[in-house]
Image (cartoon, rainbow, N blue to C red; front, side):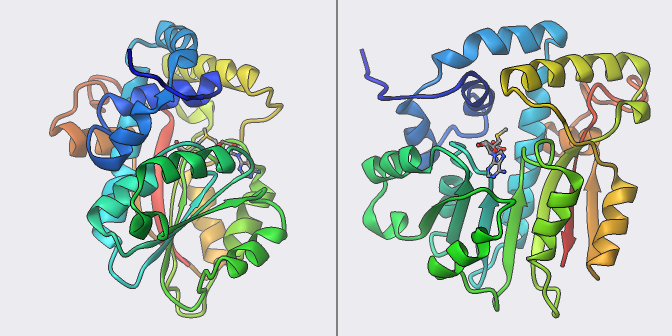
Length: 282
Ligand SMILES: C[S@@+](CC[C@H](N)C(=O)[O-])C[C@H]1O[C@@H](n2cnc3c(N)ncnc32)[C@H](O)[C@@H]1O
């Protein structure tokens, strides 16, 4: 039997289980995930799927959309910052399409484990492209650490905030974004967020509250930050930024599978998902 040296928490393992089956099926991302023991994610996966059988569709639609936005906007001058990257192998999938991208991943934990995993599978020229930074993204230290890692704030950068806006307060989120503000608006932020249950229909609000309730218990969180497009637009305006696109779950699904199956706005008004993705320039 193959040995899987790296084990992780139930929530991280569940997310990677959902992503592995479709999003990370090729290249170094697949090789990386083959080395991770995802067993710990199975019980939580069953619990979430009890709330709604097709929960994984939300995550896959989100990951598909975020990657497509990166792919469509990445060029050779770009740098990529992945805030709160955790153990997700997005960076490896990006290097598959552009091996010259300079990537900075930041997370409060597991960066040492991730470094070992990268070292065990990546050739030197690719591992040189990724710098892993252990830091709280809400701390002032982040920018010092980025500078130390040769992040160049004069060239265009794509900043990914995936799976993180739920866990930081609104106040901190916009302080973090303000640090990436540029005079020439050459930075692009791609982020996902959970809309307030009051904006979902009752059924969907119950399901999403159940799923996020399970996750916040597992993660011992007191608060899940909710955002909506209007409040994001207003904050981006204050940073002199420009909103670019908004993807509701039905838009993401249509783009990923070519049809609306679970997120058809006519059959399922309000959608069984309050997760959206947007991108803006700052
Ligand atoms: C749900 S995971 C998302 C991982 C990955 N971005 C994805 O979407 O698959 C949330 C990650 O946020 C990290 N995190 C939470 N609060 C953080 C903070 N203040 N600073 C840095 N990382 C943080 C956690 O360690 C965890 O890896």
